[in-house]
Image 1: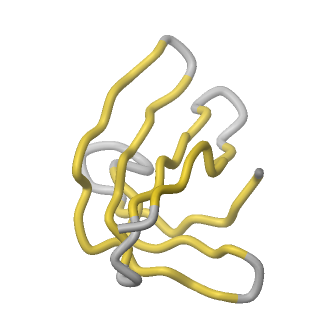
Image 2 (image 1 turned 60 degrees about the vertical axis):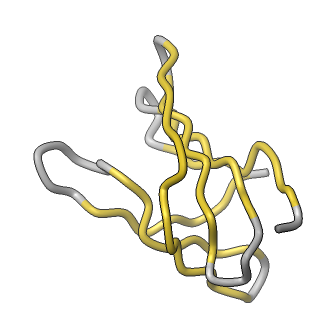
Length: 73
């Protein structure tokens, strides 16, 4: 599922997500729990302000974000 993400750009662009939108609702990222890399993307396991965990994927070649997984907190 493609999503809209606002991210922090520090040392590099889209360094980490700050908040993301699902439907009409925005979720703030309270914590980046984990991150890992593959050759084409960066994955972020985040705890949102609703207390749930989400895995967000940022595809670097086409600069798209997707929601990969959800877990109720």
